[in-house]
Length: 164
Image (cartoon, rainbow, N blue to C red; front, side, top):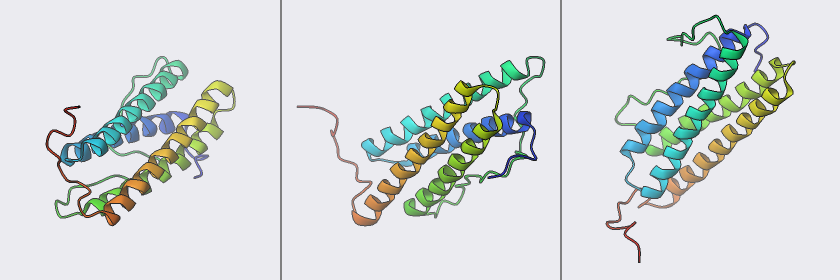
């Protein structure tokens, strides 16, 4: 992904917007899932997206202390949007869309890191975010394979977490 034609400010605002939207989408997905194990994984990823947003916000405040953070409705940086409005979309299709978004987020954070030339710690953190996004991709890939393999993937097992 080539971010050379975008300002650092636009890149940061786009990153925050993307993380906000991703978190909301993951919370929406988790709210529809009955499988407690998968629900926990997706909520964990939603929380990670919030931490990414907070980190980028901190960078923004340090780099542009006099500018207010105004999250755009649409980002100038071309990032895929996760729209899951169709009620008839299958769980496998949902995970395929999420996987595409996670792969794009990986590429975005790698390109973002390349734009930070004056702070190695921030650069390494953004590269780490890129690897985390790839980890999210792999998790969703495995769960999608489980959905395709096991018919009762999203079965609700009463008293699953009661304990011994």
